[in-house]
Image (cartoon, rainbow, N blue to C red; front, side):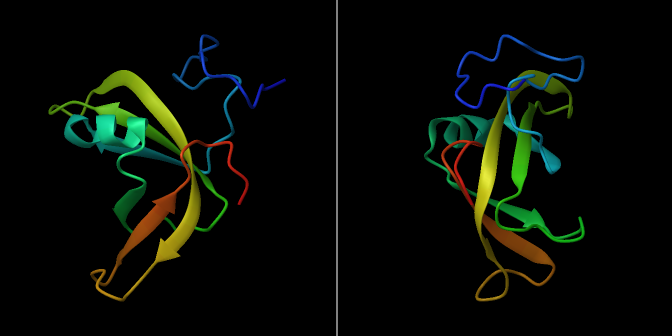
Length: 107
């Protein structure tokens, strides 16, 4: 059983996910230069190409840090989508996703 209040994440599964974390709807790579700001909450959004059949409010993202060689570093965070912005200054084919401070927030 998953513990929605786990902050330790010592229960890693073979793919690096915390066994007590939410089941992600999308797994995305995040460059090291942006990961710290995502992790500490300074960057509560993601701009992404909308090529996954549509991001939706309430979905959970598993954001995994990758280095300059696109190799996973082992660091990751979960975030829940709270808002999806298309158009209005966002380039066609892209979306700006508003994110909760953690993956446990309710949609």
